[in-house]
Amino acid sequence: MHVNQQVREAIKAKLLNTGAFAMVATNRGANLEEVDLPAAIITTTSDDITTETKDEPIPERRIIRVSVVIVADAAMEDLDDRMDDLRVEVEKALAGDLDGLAFRMEHAGATLEVGTDEEGQHWFAFYALEWEVELWTRQGQPDEVWR
Image (cartoon, rainbow, N blue to C red; front, side, top):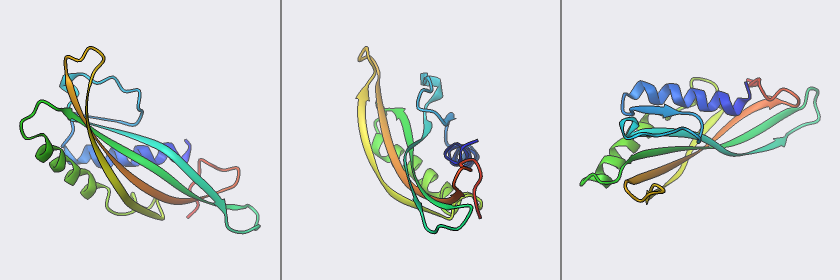
């Protein structure tokens, strides 16, 4: 399992433990129904890899950008407050190093948007929270975290 997937799975486990979400998914293609809200969708949006030395096997420093998108019904009268309450749950759950998987994990910001589905019959709110996760692998071994 690629380290990106390992990061998404570790975040999923932490968010499931909060009990704040009806659904937590690790792929952006998750089908959401009203019964699944509020939901958290975890994606890896990019990663940067640098090599620090020429030692064999070559160590790679990876900075993985992870997004946790909170999805909720935008028709709630207290939408902003409810989304911030959910954000508190996510930020508390993700404080730390993902139980030793990450060398460093840093919250990088968030964006709140409100949109509609294709038919325009239902309004959804999307709160995208971003993290930078640093971990190390060795060249040719993208499925093994190097500690």
